[in-house]
Image (tube, rainbow, N blue to C red; front, side, top):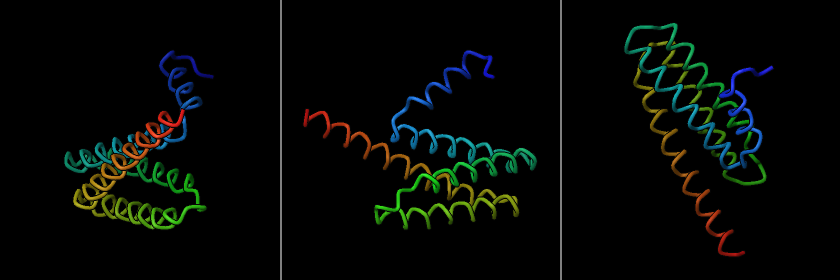
Length: 129
């Protein structure tokens, strides 16, 4: 049972968001978790780093689960996502920010690309109405 108003708002937002918005929300979460994981490594707070790098991995696994293999790009994205998970594991094991920062950059680029594609699709749909 959800008691806090903000939690109710978040749940409603998730349940009513269009698929493109949900995808962007996943990217936002992964980006946030990687950033916190990097700060954990930098602060030598390895419990924090582990927690948040693992959360980022879980979000990337959700991105993998959301792939639609009817489109050829899905196979490529699957490989990219698997690489991201591998690099986050390496960052966590070696307590190195280098692989995590690389993945942060990739996540930001992909998020921007999906945002642009979503806006283009929305504009095209509006022009057809």
